[in-house]
Image (cartoon, rainbow, N blue to C red; front, side, top):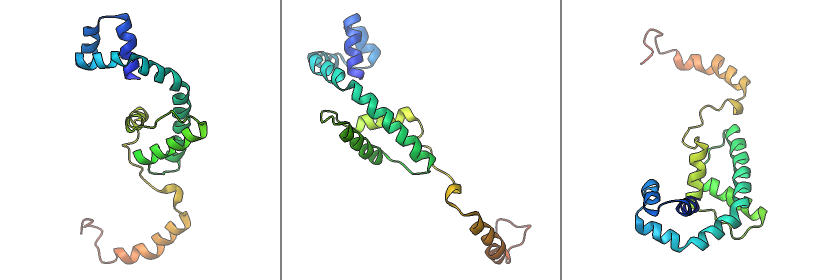
Length: 147
C-alpha cells in the first residue's frame, strides 16, 4: 500500500520531495520505481481480496474480543490464512507486516482483557463469600487491611 502510494505521488510530483516526505532514501525510491509494474499489478489484483479479508478479520476480531478471548499476532495470522483460503485467492500473502498494520488499526491489541464476569457463576461467588471468605479473614483485624 505504501509503495503504491509513493508511486502515485511520484507520478504527480517531485521525486526528491516525495522521498523526503515519505522518510525514505533516494536509493529506496529508485528501487520502488524500478519495480513499479510489479507493485502496481500486485496492488490492483489483490485490492478487493484485501478489503474482504480485512472486513472478515475485523468482524471475527470484535466477536473474539466480546467473548474475552485473548488474541495475539499468530492467532490473527492463522485466522487470516483461513479467510484467504475460503476466498480462494492463492496469490494473497498474509505477511507479518500486514498483521501488524491490522493490529495497529484496531488499536486494541495491547489492551488487556480484564475480568471474567461472563464466565463466573454468581451462585458460586455467593457461596464463596458466605462460606470460605470468613474463614480466610478470621485471623486478620479489619483495622489492618495490609497484614
